Length: 111
Image (tube, rainbow, N blue to C red; front, side, top):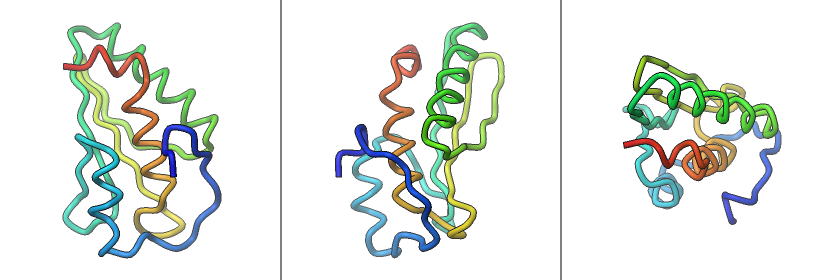
């Protein structure tokens, strides 16, 4: 599956734990939590303007995919985390969105 071209779909079953390393290999820089319920990545920026440009780009992507992350935003950083609450874990939707967030032009400003 090409994650950069994929579209999210409703999902209720999480990815089996033994398949997670394969999925994680497709989204460099993203880390699972201890329970494999979410993946997260911190993006660091030089200033608040770059941070907010990134946040707005993530919001547009999330709206288009109808799959919304949790964001922690500060002056020069934004941590993005994805989880599929209806599946109580990680689904392909989380990895689709993680890959697409990492590919945003605004993410290129991240250090």
